[in-house]
Length: 264
Length: 206
Image (tube, rainbow over the protein chains, first blue to last red):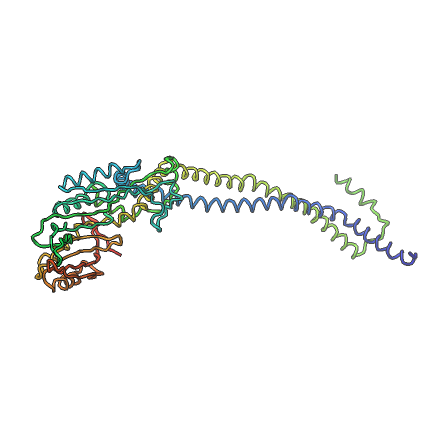
């Protein structure tokens, strides 16, 4: 590098150095300030902002919880009134082992008490997996509670008035039994004997009705009784599942009305 | 003190040339700049201290207090054995069980309704028609089989049922003549507009 070229550069360097020397105090303090801002103030400010954000979150969460608490306190008035209904439901649809045999026996006894003859009966058990689609309590989140259906088919014979009385007592009885299907018909008159053109005897066993026929009726009736059952028998799990039901969910009013009006 | 102050005044002289106005302005600016630059880290430190105090003694404890309140309330509400927890459990049990039996309850029909209806229709008919069987199908449709010695019997019974405001979807399913008894056997199906649940409660059939 030529001396002529070096001279201005040295001059410039000297000038920058002089300026730096002249403002060294300001430069050092400014740098210290920047360090303080970056290493202390900004983290503290960030922490403060975080705290405010968390306070805001906690406030809104707290308000939600207070509303939930108020709703749950309001449940006291509703649920205490419905406790009797729950006791009735537990009595009508007990949570127990299968009652297939006792159900069949109780129907047989009721039929006999009303003067009917039981000719045949078949009783089974079906676990209902799905339920009302509008229900909030799906099987997956009901803690293992199942509704068990005990379908039964009974074939009975007797007088019309006895059958009416039996059906009436079945409906108005203390058990929750559904008549799913019914077929009641007058028993056929005694077989008629008729001869055809070739003198062969033909037995006609058609349903023949006349005002003078004997008052003997036969009925095929499909009944259903219901039971609750905990699949795994874990009542604590069941209780937790009940607890998880949202407090703004209300029991079916139609069912409560039905229970209250029919089973006092 | 007063004497000491007078001495420099007596011997005051300055060999340096007086500073120019520009130099004085520059020096004044430099002093001001130094002053403010010195204030800057002090201000930063003060601000940092203020933020620290605010975080440590005001906002931090407030946040902790909110967190504690939320935790307390959450644990209270999540306790199934608390007073409100028991209420919630009972409500949940009632909700679950009533949901389960909502559909079966709809199927519970008082069959006395169909007998009473048949009595009304067949009780005073001019064609001497009589009901011979009663039924309810899986679909919920009620069926009455009847016979009549009069050929007008099926039509008159059908008309009487159709005129009754209690029922809907009335249908004459079949009519046939029994050649042995000369009776006309017929089947009528219908549905009740309002199905009796029993004990005075009713529901509208949808």
